[in-house]
Image (tube, rainbow, N blue to C red; front, side):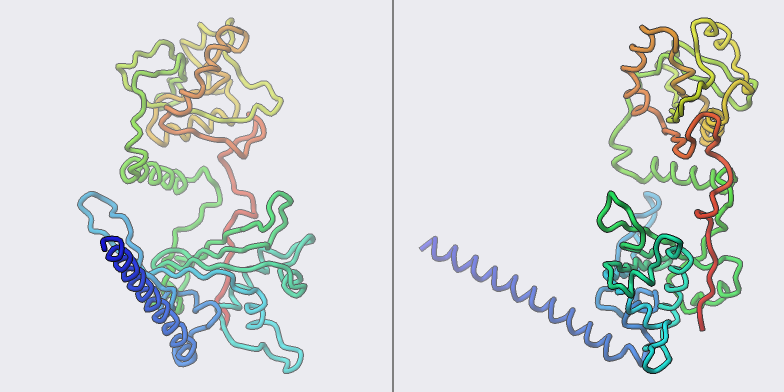
Amino acid sequence: MQNSWASLRDATSSLLKGAGTAAQVATYVGRSVKRQLTASSRGLCLVCNNLQPYHHENTRQVAMAATSSAGAQKTITMLTLENISTRDLLDAREPDPTIGLPKRHCRYCRLLCDIFDAFFIDEYMSWITETLNKMPISVGLMVCEGKPLVVNCWGFTYDRHTLFPRVDLELYPDPTAALVSSPTFGNIPTMDPTGHRAETVASDACFEFIRECVAQCCIEHQDCQSQPRDTSFVPTRLLYIGKDNDDLRIRMGIPATENIRWAALSHCWGGGAPFKLLQGNLQALLEKVEISDLPPTFCDGIRVSRELGLQHIWIDSLCIIQDNKMDWEIEASRMGMVYSQAFVVVCGASSPNPQTPFLGPREPEWLAKTFNLPD
């Protein structure tokens, strides 16, 4: 009898779950049908939803983490659209040969086409040609209330290591444009204006962005807070950078009781010979390091560290005696701790060698491009 009751209970539970699922599906389908029937009267595009998150069956409310312990949790409206056909986007801009006009009118789809023209047409590939040849390229939209619009571009580029490479574009209103004064930002209500994108990564704005990111990590990220660093570990040597270039010197035997924080520089030697710590110059560098002796990559690492309020940095060529095999073997075995226990690791990934700075003007391809919303 107990088994019968258990079976009946499980069957009833399954039916209830099934009924709940069926109700959810019916609600979803109903919303989808309603959107398609009312889209015309609302002026909504069935392809891109006018690049805003409202009035769609996939619209959802997302809880955002509070920015402080006393702050209230906030919810925002979000919409994610996947597998948008580039053929459908082109139909809003390219004339149909049979009628001489585009098949449909959507200024937002045309805006996306104009953007793709600027980023994905070159001597090697054209997103239009790929579309007309029915190649597997598609678009996704991540539309979040009060945030820049993220456009996922699948298959727009060639990568021999990835079957379907993806490139993300971020769209936001120009904060200096007249449309920002409009309450709906030119009928794109979800996109808040973003500050001017600096043309050089050595700008004050970039450093302020870095400081904000690090502060957010320290204050809000629970995973980071739950992994306390080993305060008993201190690198054998660190470059003391102080507040100005007259303070530079190598420090040895720093006691753990100082509880110092340091940055670690990750850089490429690139076949060059950067300024190095040797047995012959150790004593001199303990007293003073001349900034003029350091290559640009090291100077950039020092600047980033100072901007973050740090007074010490670990650089392999300056903190390991390069012509002492025993010291090199000992310190190389400790590098994992040096990097993992560092407050931050500064990675000069764009520098192929120490003579190439990584703080400087952005390459043109990484600069923001400006587009006008078509009529």
